[in-house]
Length: 238
Ligand code: PXP
Image 1 (cartoon, rainbow, N blue to C red):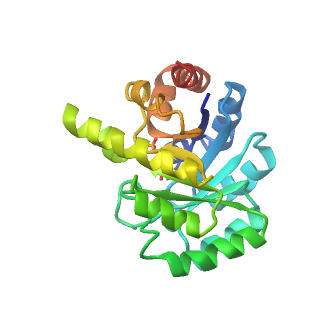
Image 2 (image 1 turned 90 degrees about the vertical axis):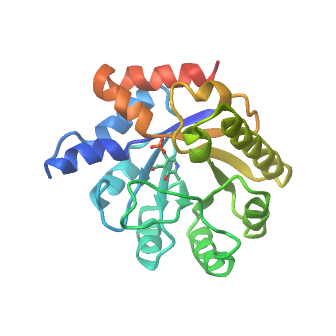
């Protein structure tokens, strides 16, 4: 059975719309854990558009499962991570003008600079995951960097507008996940996973953890956090 890690960024998005104190992503994380989530994910962006430094600090003290901090590979963020000490850092590419993370990290191109960041995080006792496209070259580069996990980008699969395209993207995910497991990397997957497409993705047995945000928070707004999380976990379990 794959684990389900819940990304609570969009609870903070609602709060920041009014620059107020509610709703609190810390409370949402606690409810997600009560509903059975196996981990909590937050993305501390350079522009602090949703999650704030305070959120990550409080979550570090309150999350009982695993705290996964998504962040860009910058000096500022590495310092934050070393202070907070999340269980896992997921390194993601970040552009100021994007609505959400758009593509995977180009680990092949950035191998040299990522090596430095990864070494610093490892020295701080933090496991590292790299968010990458479902591409064998990227998986091999991640393996060379000796990270613990890769997170395979499922966004192209989720956005596919035809059956053929979706099947192609699915096959890419399967091939990448198999290679990652052969290389003894832990395999996470995420982006665009929802209550419908999980039916197909959950068949990729190599995926050990799904990282899910938007679809669960969107449903939680209407039916409540615990129900939204429980329904997703039930679907992941088939
Ligand atoms: N994984 C990564 C690396 C992400 O950047 C995001 C979006 O914050 C997610 C997973 C979750 O994607 P979604 O919100 O589409 O479920």
